[in-house]
Length: 80
Image 1 (cartoon, rainbow, N blue to C red):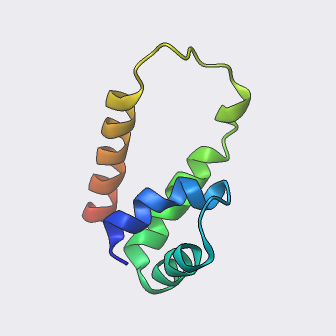
Image 2 (image 1 turned 180 degrees about the horizontal axis):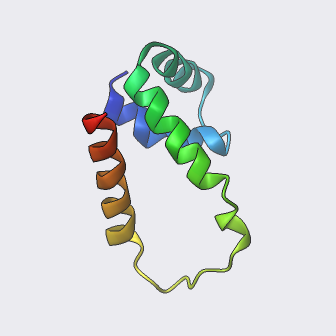
């Protein structure tokens, strides 16, 4: 599994929506790849902030925000 595919699989991992093989591949990749482990921890911390308890407007387009946030996280990981 490559880094990009692993990172796209994380939301499904969190909601337990991966088949056994895919889940095992994601977990194996996380155990072997320090960059993805760091990426995973950052996103896990963001998720755990409790945003799911805040009612955000559903009609807003969150894609630009999500892309900018992901870009900043990747940039931060690369510069460390």
